Length: 223
Image 1 (spheres, rainbow, N blue to C red):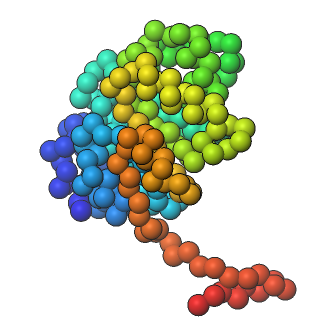
Image 2 (cartoon, rainbow, N blue to C red):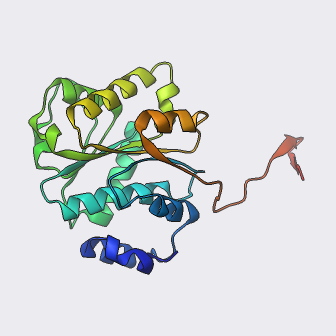
């Protein structure tokens, strides 16, 4: 599938940004997501290998929402500050001329009032939990929640916070759309059912994965 094939689904300014980034041919997971309703209002759980194009699937949902519905907000959750910083740098470079991109990973006792002016907000589960408890008014404007590394729901330390956040937001925001991303989910069907989400599974990866054994500074690969 080519980007040109979905031009009518994309907000024109978004489409032009992608063209400038030389994104022309879509990867298998992206094509599957589109065919399963990415451009509708469905929740989605995307389970594909690293570097298979999961982030662009989330961008299709996020950026289209923000540009087609001015005044709405989107939250991108990442488990680590380093990952938030990386995505903030990428999204600011790509979309900074179209919207206000902001990140919030600092003091958990602060409501970070500057986020009221932001469109695309990148943060960690712990910080979002704090913002919810501060009862920030802009929260009701959130239309899409992207949860990167959503398999951390199974993490004994961080999972409960993430589960509470998702549950609270789904209760508060009746029309919230959730996009979950992961390369390593053991119970994908069960999680998709909990999220009321379309499940997108694909095994394509840009570089073939080989298994082998390292011994005495030499690797013997399995057939």
